[in-house]
Image (tube, rainbow, N blue to C red):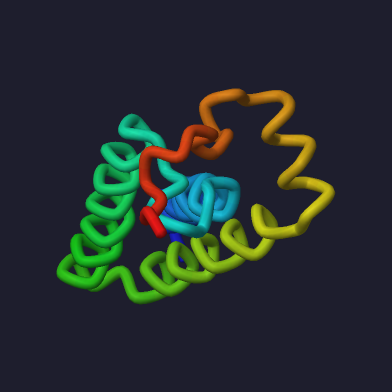
Length: 106
């Protein structure tokens, strides 16, 4: 494996880990997402899927699998309750919507 292949794999793994981590830290219910979070989930989806598709088309199988693994690992790490609570305190943007705007009336 050449140096460029190794660097590409590491960079793609870090991008995948970041995308998955953000998804893991965001609220799981769609009605709890703020407008900004909804926009960014679409952008992150495009980045994650687009990166994997480009890597597959370029024939970089290892980098594409490592990227997918990084996304899954980031998602699992972000869903760990103590880490999730700590991240919500540090980054207020990740906090769920608090008003009753998205809830159904009875």
